[in-house]
Image (cartoon, rainbow, N blue to C red; front, side, top):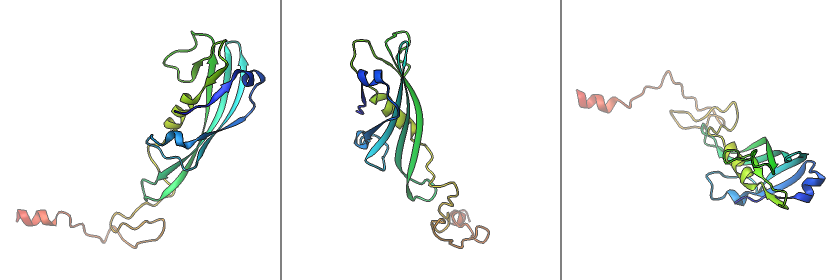
Amino acid sequence: MVEVKLFRADLEQGLDKQLFEISSAYFINQDIVIAEDKITCSLTSEKQWHGYRLIGDLTIPFFKTCDCCLDEFTDQHTTQFIIILTNDAELSGEEDDDVICFGDADNTVDIGPVIRELVLVEESLKNICRADCKGICQYCGTNRNRENCGCNANTIVEDRWENLKQIIK
């Protein structure tokens, strides 16, 4: 499980773009692959009447395989988030993943579960190595990003139905 523990004393002083490095080993058993050894998280904290407001940037280097050309690539995602640490029970609820109960008697809070969810949500469903990816030729299987195969869709005759035609005759 991902652990990112914050101390009340640090929150009281205020975090100003404090950098945290999270080991990618926390995500080994997930269905995602991180390209580097770490994920970086930058946090700023603001004291509020009910506790603290954390504003952060999370940078995740996903290791992907392109759905079009099958090349491997690193897909760098950066996402911004806000987490509320509160001592007000009415503000925190089971549905709010970004609101964490942080009582006045607590000296530390772990925002790791929220970070973990942010990483899992950032994983894209469609993986394209670049906007102009040409993919693989459907006729010969050549990666068209690397070379032009010369196949012309107009001159290629599909013969996948020929065997069926022979049976029908």
